[in-house]
Amino acid sequence: MNTYIFLLDGFAVSIFGSVLSAAFCNVNNTPRNRLVFWCFALWLPLLQGAIYAFWGADFLQKVYPLAVHIPLILVLYTLSKDLMWSVVSVFCAYLCCQLRRWIALLIVALVSGGELVHNTVQLLMTIPLLLILLKFVAPAFRQLAHHPAKIRAQFCVIPAVYYAFDYLTTVYTDLLISGGYVVIEFMPFVCCAAYLVFLLYLSKQDQKRFQLQQAQKVLDAQLSQSVREITALRDSQALARQYRHDLRHHLQYLSACIENGQTEQAQSYIAGICREIEAQKVQCYCENEAANLILSAFAARAQKCGVQMKVQAALPAAVAVSDSDLCVLLSNALENALNACQPLAAAGAVCTVDVQIFEREGRLFLQVRNPSREAVRFENGIPVSDRPDHGIGVQSICAIVERYGGVYSFAVQQEEFILRLSV
Image 1: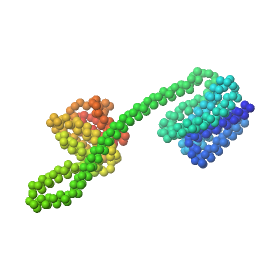
Image 2 (image 1 turned 90 degrees about the horizontal axis):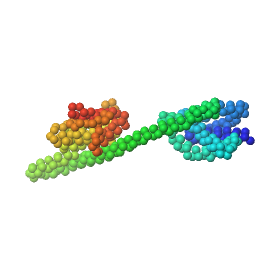
Image 3 (image 1 turned 30 degrees about the vertical axis):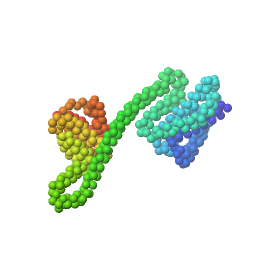
Image 4 (image 1 turned 90 degrees about the vertical axis):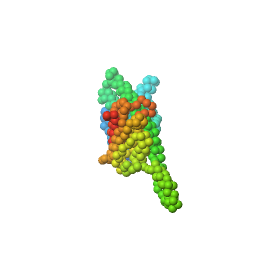
C-alpha cells in the first residue's frame, strides 16, 4: 500500500511542478503550446516510473534534475523563447513544492503518523494547493516576466539558493540530517539576508518614487504656466493677423480722411493702428515657433522692467526636445534671469540678459547669462535657495535635462550667473 501511495505521490508532484512551472512561464497560451506541454507532462511521470523500476528510488532522486528539471526547462524555453524565465519558473515551482512537504510534516508531527501518512497528506494536498497557486500566485508571477533581466535575476536568487541547498544537503549528502548548526541555520540566514536586502531596496525605490513625484508636480505646474503663456501669445498673433486682414478697411478710412482734408486725424489713426499691431507682434528669432513665442514674451517683460535682452537663436522648426519641454526650459531659465535683474534695474544699474540657443548635431544647446550681485549658494553644483517657492525652476530644468540624458551646469563668474545646458 505504501508503495502505491509513494508512486501516486511521485506522479502528483511531477504534475504539480510541471503545471505550476508552465503557469509561471505562461506557455499554455495557444492550443499548440498546450498540446506540446501536456504530451510532455504526461510522458514525464512514465520516465520517472521506468527509472524507479530499474534503478530504485535513491537513484531517481539523484538524477531528478537531469531526468525531470532540465527537460522541463528545455520544453518551456522551446514554447516561450525565454531561457532565463524558464529556469526561474522551474526553480520557483520547486520552491512551492516545499509547501506540500511542510504541511505533511506538520500533520505527521501532530498525529504521530509515519511515512504512509506523510505521503498520503502530500498527495491529498496537491490539487487544492495547485489550484490556489494557479489562481492567486501565477498571475502575479507572470507580470514579473516583463521586468528587466536584472530584476528577474534578483527575484530568482532565493529559489535558486534553496534548490541548490536542498539537493546538496538532503539528496547528494546527509548534511541536513546530520544536524550541523551551520547547515540547519543556513536557510533562515538566507531568508533574513533577503529580507534586509529587500527592505533596503524598497526604501531606495520609495525615495526615487517620491523624488519623481515631486519632480512631476513641479513639471506639471511649470508646463501649465507655459501652456497658458503660449496660448495667450498665439491669441495675440491671431489678432495681429486679423489687423492685417482688415488693412483694406483701414486704408479706405484713411483715404476718406485725406479726401476731406483731415490730415491730422489720419495721422493719429495711423499711429494708433501701428501701436496696436506692434504690441501684438511676435519677433522672429529663429524658425522654431515655440522658441519665438517664449523669447518674444520675455523680451517684452524685460523691456518693461528696464532690462535689455540680447538673443542669438538658431533653431530649426523641429528639434529633438518637445515643445512643452522646450518652453519649460526657456521659461524657467529666463524667469530666473529676470528675477535676478529686476532689483538691479530698479536701482538704476544697466542689466543685460544674454541668451544663446542653437541646435547642433541633433542636440539643443542653451546658455543664459545675467548679472548677479547676491551670493549664490550651491549644493552639488546646483543653486539652492531657502526662500519659499524659490528653486523650483532650477529643479524643473535639471529634471528635464536628466530625462533626455543631457548635461547642465550653473556657475557664477565675475558677478555674472551663467546657465549652460545641452539636451
